[in-house]
Length: 249
View (tube, one colour):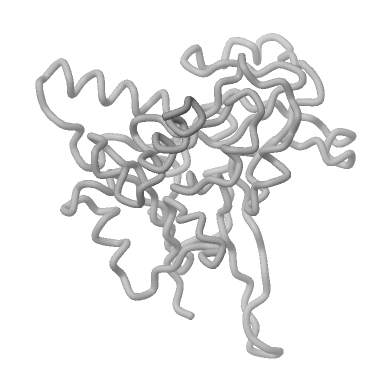
């Protein structure tokens, strides 16, 4: 077997639809759109937790805003019975992520927990991943941002500050996942359901966002995923997102 054939076989095995079952954890999220009020508490919490820069008015107008989660708005119904609806949109951590195979330096890949993660030091800024992401969930750093004093003291030491020329996106607050896993390992147990809460989930006042282990059938996220209101965004693309949305359609 040639080296190329060996790589192909390994890739097919890796891409087996059941590959996530061999992992200890497979993290996912359920978002109840009937609970979301569009308050953007999740957006603010994400910015604070993950050291997202504020680009200012000029940067916003230039299309250089950096957000790992955004609130999409749309009108539902017909006048005069019309309602404003909200959809929190973030990286879907797809099982078949189209952003991964197009990266020439393997800066974005699947980790052992089934998360789509980013190696910032590998990224050379081709932006291929952003071009292939159907959810518009990736941001590019056009500048190396700095924080004026005393705001620099609020930076999270557990999260890398990204530099100019680097892509970034939601990580499901992987630093919190690692901390919970380390604690569970020290106590010789699995991570308990609800023990890991990304900043967006923790800050939601209506509990519209729920996070947990998809491999645990008793977890809240696994049970909610069976709700008949559940659907995946752009399911027809076969990306198999790790996020399930709940909505009365």
